[in-house]
Length: 417
Image (cartoon, rainbow, N blue to C red; front, side):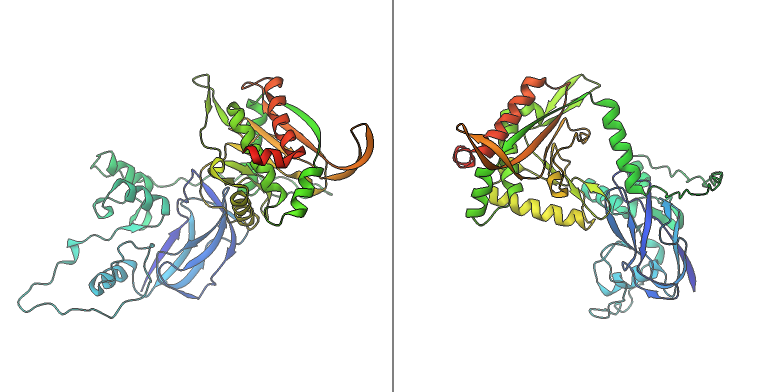
């Protein structure tokens, strides 16, 4: 019986750490190859991590709530059958599953087993090297490049192929570079407890949010403008017509406004001193999920009808609230419905590297003058924060009015779209 220590794998997207949220197995449990064993939280989403080893869980190396760096021990498995032997058994059985930790069942198939022909020498065990791959990013990188992982020299712990191995193979370097032993980091000095204080460590998600917001405030010279909008016509249209929600109509009007003012669907290339405008509108939707504020994107919003926008907005917001947002194209503009929190206005922070964000407050019955007569109307406040490097107030006001006019006369706006 041998033991294998499974290290926290490279989860991609430049992430260097993850927090253990929930263990899916206990010490002493028996697991199979590719069985999810732990749920971790990264700066991007919640991820279930599968084990590349089969056997009995000997040690869980981190408690729930602990943040681990990539490459640190996650769990140790006492393997009744080694991963390599499992692989060779599946190969002999004709399963076709060739990567440990990816697409394998962890059980030995018994069908289609063939006896070697008479006088035919059995192949040497060393003739086929078993590629051990844990990270989905490493598998994808090799697959997209057409690289045979069995030809890659592994430098990771336990013979695991890591990203650097694949990149080195793609660059044509045949020499294997030994991975240096990790130097233990010096423990941080303990902060003395102060009566009446409670210290809560930032999670990986909050660290990422903090870095992004700080960068936005530091780099973007932002300005905010706002306007009260009579949304009575839109409210009545929504009440009389079953189908898309109010947010879908707002998204449709925002997309139309971005087509008219494309400099707001852009980013700033500071190195080249250029404004980069995008043809595609990936509309980010600000969502308050279980882990905090996230902004999933409706990709290709410029091609969608109001009904289709409604479907996509509901899908991405549901996933975001559950913390299950997957890798996708980045948003190019953000729409924020903070009215759902029963507030009227906000000077929001731009989602870097975007250049603008549009928000709507709650819709309230307010006194309003229409054709010289005082009446009660459905009023919402619309606030717009923009990067002053890409445009001035006149452009920002023009975009806002295009959206506001569509809200106040939605039937005519939809007919023109």
